[in-house]
Length: 334
Image 1 (cartoon, rainbow, N blue to C red):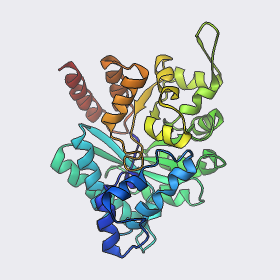
Image 2: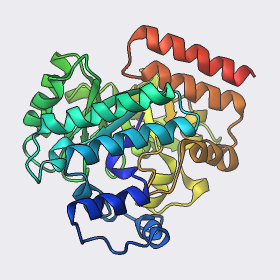
Image 3: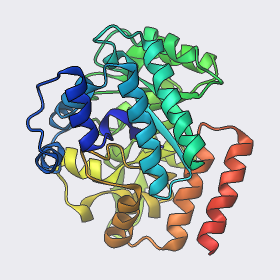
């Protein structure tokens, strides 16, 4: 549900793509050392975490590179047991060497289709606009040209604090008018007001991360949770939160037991579990599932619930969601 293409490259692929285009900016070409460099476990802030993308974006500047990265992302997700995934990235970032946004999107879709053909994994593409830039309408226009061809959603990504989502209202409306699903990064580095703006002003159907919704929750002396207006709306409307535990630990600098995923799940919020950036957080979806089991007491029924919730919230057609929900339930039953 929440997996960034340029945050999920294989280390060896980064090295090979850099060599292909003559990019000499990598901190090292030793695979083990580069994997360590990309590990953002100690970043402590979203801004610092995002700096590591400079190198992956730098090597994704040709159609072949984008297609390869998308194909390998699908392969890796399928190998981890994933049956449905939405991969997202901002095509504008891949236009530095002359590609158009449309060229980039076509290349990504080609790679995802190859992965589907070889693995059976169902894949969709979400186009991101960078909220700290002013061309989100152009990003949305490129995205809507591929409605029905594999692009399933539109997103606002990038630094959250200081860049409210409704500054990109026109882009969000354009994407929605053409039938794209709308998910917006909110409540990661900024508080409940960011989530409120994404939902009330932009019409977000899902919230990327959303964990700062806990700032609108008070735990009483009796241990009962009391919800503020934003938290109550998100819970009562069952707006899906794309929670990415390891990424949150790294960008917020919190301990595993302090992550709010357990509190939110027990309080009835609609959660999905996601990897965000598999390279920077050295994580798989299996790792994210293990995290909530080991640190927040999730059992098999809890895991099944969040997995089925993810499929219910997917930007896929009804028949696909129903078919894959059956696959998931059969898997848990066995």
